[in-house]
Length: 140
Image (cartoon, rainbow, N blue to C red; front, side):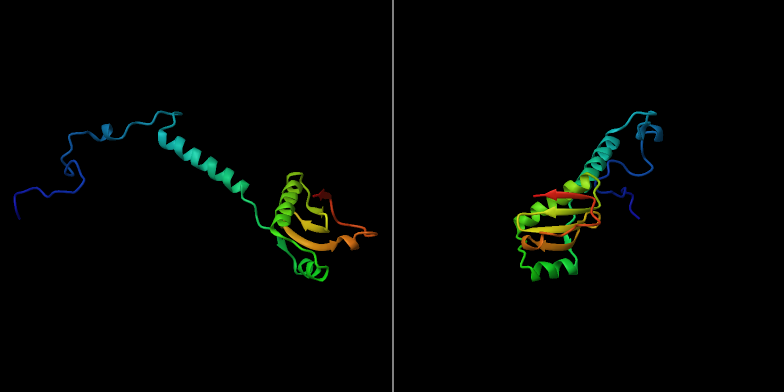
């Protein structure tokens, strides 16, 4: 073995040869005072929670609703889907569980909790229908 000390890269001192006492290395945390890490950590948690609450789940269609859309030739373009999504968000904000969403061309029954379109009717089929098991309606 050589008499030269072993060098550690990116280390300012060799282990065991510190002139700083262990109590001086880590500042003592005062009770009730938050350090910079705690403040950054809490801000990160708060922003992640807010972001998660703002994320919209996509609207789904049941097999029955999908078949009704095809049979009745109801078009759901991206603009209309965005409006229906917004309508479901409004219903959710009011605590509605099952909503009737009325568009210019159709009526959709939507489970707000599951974000699922249950059934769809075209404008010509609306007259004379009674909508049951809904607790709200949104007209777009």
